[in-house]
Amino acid sequence: MTAYTFTIRLREKSQVVGQAVLCAEARYVSVWWTSPPRVDRRFATPTQWLRIINELDAKLPANPLEDTSTIVQVLVGEHAPRFLIQYLTAEPIEEAPERVTPVLEQRLRMLQI
Image (cartoon, rainbow, N blue to C red):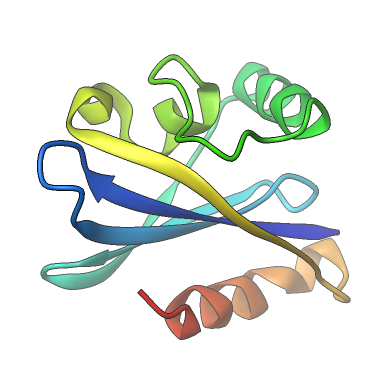
């Protein structure tokens, strides 16, 4: 399994306001917002997961993702025009899918913003 991390910045200020972790194999997505500090677990539909997997397979760009990206839509929804979502890293996760959620949540809290 692979955990993908993303930064979330305000478009007009370019200020980092959160980070996200996504693991398609575990069907896990969460955002760590900086103000107020909190984890926001996000959920995707089966169709969205198929699109996310296609986006990941096509290689993520170095530039911010397009607002129409399914990843962006799952992370911030209708607020996409306010944010820039940018791919940061991809790291392997050595856990079974049913036990990966606590590992991913811990990783999300440990990310340096």
